[in-house]
Amino acid sequence: MKRIEYKAMGSRILAVLDCAASVGEQALERVPAWFEAWEQLLSRFRPGNELDRLNKSNGRPMVVSRTFWEVFQASCSAEKFTGGLVTPTILDSLARLGYDRSFELLPPMQTGHLYTSPGKPGPTGAIVWDLPTRSLVLPESVHLDLGGIAKGWAADRAVRRLSHYGPALVAAGGDIAISGSLTDGQAWPIGIEDPFTIGTHFEILKLARSGVATSGKDYHRWLKDGIWQHHIIDPRTGLPADTDVLAATVVAPSVMEAEAAAKAVLILGSQAGLEWLEADSGLAGVLVLENGTRIYSDNMEKHLWIN
Amino acid sequence: MSNKSKNRWLDVQIILASLAVTSTLALWNLFVKGSCPVASSIDNPNPDPTSTFVFTPNPTATAYPTATATLDPLAPIHLPKVHILLGGSLPIPVAAQPPASASGKPASASKSSASSSNPAPAPVASTSSSKP
Image 1 (tube, chains in turn brown, cyan):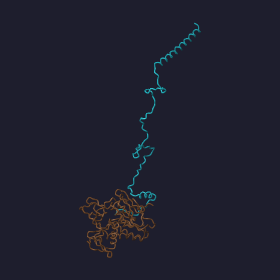
Image 2: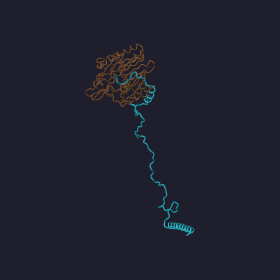
Image 3: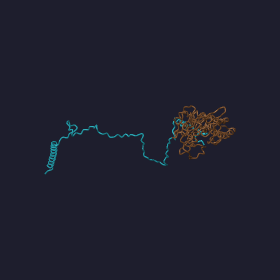
Image 4: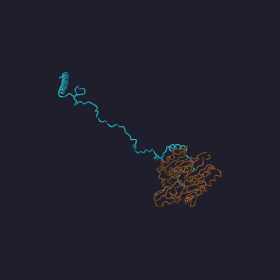
């Protein structure tokens, strides 16, 4: 089994390929270049890139690349899938709350004016697009942040490319895409990190062709005007989600669904989040609450390493 | 005086002494019966209630508290801290720690018992919200 690990998109990237041949190793070596190209297109922290230009288009139509188009469509699907809880139109809310640069560059204490009207992000329905020409018209009041979805999409795309050489796994931060079972037929053992004890796992999952993602408010925190903020924005308020869930891990058929679902569950809170999760038989998850309680969805047990 | 007459005098003295003792006892008994009241007894057909001692259980008598011990199951039992050492050192107390977090679903209970029989391998990757 070969692996490559490095940092991109503000996260730790891990790619693993269950292939003994040298072509597998060569394929893994290309992964950083793939991520760099995608980050250049999709990151909101790369001035002058495609996303930046679109956000500054001021309502003028703009033709986007195929990659950008795919990620935008994936974000629209996530918005529909989560009933609007996960939307790419949260950029202004994030910027207002002080998350206006890469997280590593945020000062520990940021000063700024108090926002009295946070402003709710607009739905993607306000964006006009044309499929044949891949053109987008972004209203002046709407700006996009493809962050989480872009990371999931990148993991999904990379694992698809690597799967030509053997069973593959790509983890982009907490978002993990798995192409299928290992060559010996076994599932991949995936740990769920304990948010209270960094570096330890409270659960080991056994996953084959699927995606898993964790969304939490335990890491991306910053202080603004004396109030702790986190990066999970509730589109209904435009503010950091007021939730009792500290971290939510969701297993889904694809990593993009898992990423969107984990975020939706976190925003909804433990009770409504669990109900929403269990309403979809394709989803399973575990919620870690702020008081340390863990809540498992009904069908999560089949993904746990118990046999 | 001859020995024969001496023996006859001695016999007379013995007879007189016996008669004296017998008459004294007879007179003593006669006067005692006449001056002392007759002591009543249980067999007396007309007992004096003020002087008769008859054992009758008193139904209103207070019973002594029984020796049965009642233990409150919730109350801590304080045992004397006595260490009997036959050599060596005190054993190290083992404290049972509750799990760090409780599970909201029975899934965790069933998995924990099964996990112990077949421990999971080391994870290839881990998912967390700690992105970097």
